[in-house]
Image 1 (cartoon, protein in one colour):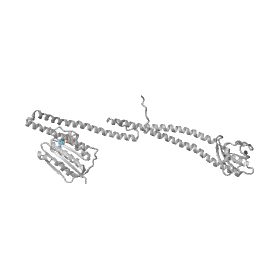
Image 2: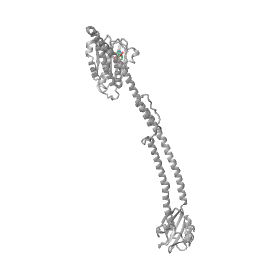
Image 3: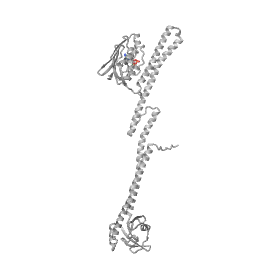
Image 4: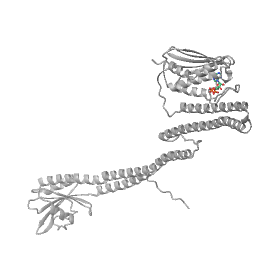
Length: 467
Ligand code: ADP
């Protein structure tokens, strides 16, 4: 069955089509009124004045041997002048400049509608004007005497005006057809290009709605359509990034969660089935379980921190904060560990280091750097935390004399989940530095690392001092 396309009255196509056609009709109407109707009115008015003037002139000459004067006036004004006289209800021609219209002098006049109209409506002072369409004549009648028995009729052929009007009407007709055709054509062309752009965009948008992130919006056509396409492409790119991150995160997280979970399950089963009665083995295996549990909660915490730091929707609003206080707070967390495991922590932090930033995020940064320094400090167990103001900047350094990082890996350690192969006992998620990087980038901070294998690493970042 053929699908009948319904006209959408709200579509750009229909709207612009009707607007153009209405505009076309309006132009035609305007032209008709000015060219045809007004022309007639204008001609009638000027003719009437012209005839009245001729009438007045004739009156001034209406005495004695007036015929010659009348003839001259008629000739000069290109009119025909007739004087009709009424006697006993009959009209006869008293004078005629042409002898054509109503007959020669002395002839009886056959009173046409127009003549009767003139005879009835004119008076001595005021003449009347009349167009006779049947004979295509313009008449002007005025009484030459107060008794209203002598009617002066001035007339002129209307043929020229008639033919002019006809030509105009034909021209107008042609112009109207051209205007209508043009307005329909132009509106159709314009609206179809307009709506074509939009339709193309909405086709692509539909694909996007169906989760097809590979769509591309063509940046062509009207500027507005281009702009829209650009915005949509940008939005799609962002969606793609989010989707990629999501997928990566899910696969990494599930991988990272599965390993410790498998170990925990394995050891738990072993304790239940085999070693439950053997205290030494059981303790050892419970230790593994606890270690893996710690690892799991560490991973979950890091993931949360990372997603929090990366949350672009939450605007970053830096405040004036004291970095020395922040460092002190971050180091507090390690007190127990340092005392228990015999780390040497050297603290060289100036007081009152005011910077613009987010206190929580900066504390997390220092915390992660120190945690790494402790983790990878090797046998030396030495950690230096330094913060000093120079040249309007605060430089914070976290240094250890531990295992160091191979040069070729210095660039990659910031990546998410990146871990250098270490002895098994070092527990990490590979997320710490990635969180640090996200936070420092948000703070527009300079940062970096210098490291040599077996000599140790120095991580640093720099923020402008806030006065
Ligand atoms: P994690 O420490 O959880 O593995 P990070 O993102 O914090 O993850 O660090 C990524 C990698 O960078 C670590 O696996 C480690 O190999 C290396 N690294 C980080 N800090 C140090 C350090 N102070 N000394 C040596 N290696 C380090």
